[in-house]
Structure formats: structure tokens, C-alpha cells
Image: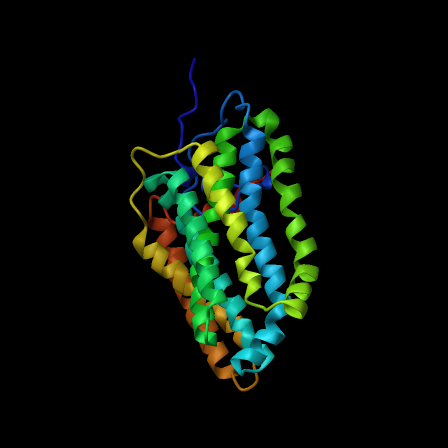
Length: 297
């Protein structure tokens, strides 16, 4: 009996099966059915990944309520603090496409743990930041961790859970993570009012430490024996394109920055065109645009 070829993490990262995984790798040429049966601890695996998602959502929503107070402490106007949010999104845009290859190359467990550690390190530096540029750099480091954490976690879930249990597993993943956006604003308001805004970043530490320990105990280490070569040129082209577009559109809301914003948007569009041409010729592009024409039904 013929069985589907087992694919690496980058291949799974490339598909949009069931609308669960964002496209960010090479499109698989064979159908992946996942494991025939789920492990008895697949709910625990889903909850561990949910901890990572909770940490990210909580961090983003809590931070938004503290921006005016942080701006006062740093001696800048409140709109200028938006760059702390933008730097995080920039890191996500640049590094999410590379998450599949990194997991293939080094294994899902160490990459997941390294991502959590990186996110916590960025949180500690953000909490101790003496100036705006420091927190912007620290948020970028957090974004690198976030870019590797959630996509790799979802891929682990796909590898660990049988198709018949996927809906149940996704409910265990999504429902706890939704607590973050609900608790974030009131928690941020409480911290800013009665404590200090720096405690916003310290909230991530106990969640991250718990997740780091549980990942080492329960998360399987999926690793591709022969991963595709890393698409370096595609990584540069897509990173420059997405980064310039993101910063360009963000700069359009700033007075007197329209010329710079339009320049960034044009540069991003040009590099995007170069990437499209590159992706059509490359065997395993870092972002497979062919997924846009694939039906999710």
C-alpha cells in the first residue's frame, strides 16, 4: 500500500490546509495526511502552544494601553511610540517566511524553545529600556521570537494530531489564547495606574518560563533530514519588500513624512516585483506564491 511521503516543516508551513496554517514556504507536491492516530497528550500540546499565543496577544494588547504613559517617560509625543509596535510587526513580516526552514534545519523543539527565550529576552530589555530606541530594538527582537514561535507551534500541532482530531485540537489551542485580548486592556490599565508600565513586559516572564519547560517535556522534535537549501535571495527580496511596504504605509500617518513614505512604498513594490520573478524560477521559494491560486475548499 502506497503511503504519502512525509514532508518537512517547511512543506507544511507552505500549505493553507483547513485555513489553519499561513502560507510561508515551498508548496508541497504530495498530500500530507498527518499521523493516523493522535497521541494521548495532544490536548496538552495544544495548550502549550496556546500559552505562546496567549503571551503574544497579551503583550500586544497590554502595551497599547500604556503607550501614552511610556511616551511621557521617554519625553516624546504619543504618536511616536507607534514605532515600538511597528518594529514588532516588521520582524514578523521578515522572519515568518523563514520559520519553516529554520524548523526543518534545527528541529521544532529547540526552535520553539529558542523563540520563547528570545521573546522573554526582548521583554526583559523592553522593561529596562532607558530610551525609545532601546525599546524599539527590543521589540524587534521580540518579533523575531514571535515569528518563530506561533508558526512552528501550529506546525507541531499538525504533525502531532490526526485529521479526525484536528478540530478538537484547534479548539484547545484557540480558546485559551483568546483570553489575551480580553484581559490585555484592563490588565494594562491596572498596571499603568497602580504599578509601573515596565511591569507590562514582566508579565510575559512566568508564562514564557512555563511554556519553555513544558515544550521540552511534551513537544516532539520534528526535523527534516534533508531540507531544501535556504532561499537566501528570496529572503532578502521578500524582507526588503515587506519591510519597506510596512514602514511606508505606517509613515503615511505622520505629518511631513509623506515623501519618505511614498519612497519606501515604491522601493517595497519594486523589490516585490523582483521577488515575484525570483519565486517563479526558484525550486523552493521562501514564500510560494502558487498558494494564492490553490483552493482551500
